[in-house]
Length: 311
Image (cartoon, rainbow, N blue to C red):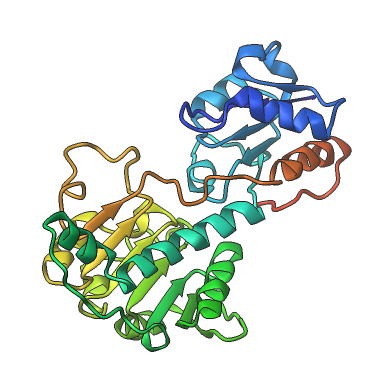
């Protein structure tokens, strides 16, 4: 039984570095990379960022796909994935903290009018502008799982009024928690900033269409660090032109990398970051090592995905 590390990325951690980290945790494990793959029939687990049907064609004895991250929609939605192949995701602390910080950074950037002051500096103009008062600011957090919970608590600790929204009921101290799609439009109309950290499911794909965007508070800010397919991008461009929302900060897009001809690059109401909000894995590779051991011993996996629900 062997574990293959194949992120499919050239601009993140190297496969060999991840393999070395896992071997430090489990020195006796058989850990391979595409450069040291050997006999593919021996590979029973693969750790990936990008999973493709080509992996399935080559790895005939695959039993577990371990996502090096949270979003698993491209794995569970793969029509070629056999029913016996299990899927697990990571729920590490480091990227949850990083994503929460990303939301906070861009909210504070708006609160403190940093773009305004940078523009004034560029033309040597001294133009005081009062920052927005944090206790008067309402921030919505869509998705109250591991990352959303961390984000909501951080924003509450800074002093924002925080409203959380999720599919099922949740409770977070200091946060007003709503649930169910019927509650979403009214919530959006209250929020000065909306932080989206939702998974990609049949219920969330295209959720932010023209109608949902129109429900947002005029001049508000929409921030998305969950899944790019949450937002209808054509509808977003039209909504920004109507000031609902007034600005969008996108760490994820429907197609990544974002094509150079996408109007999102050039729209004055859009800020793009290239899927960097949850960069660091921290100690998450210990979960990968443990899942390899658990798979081999037949015990319950960490963070196994319910393939029928998609998360």
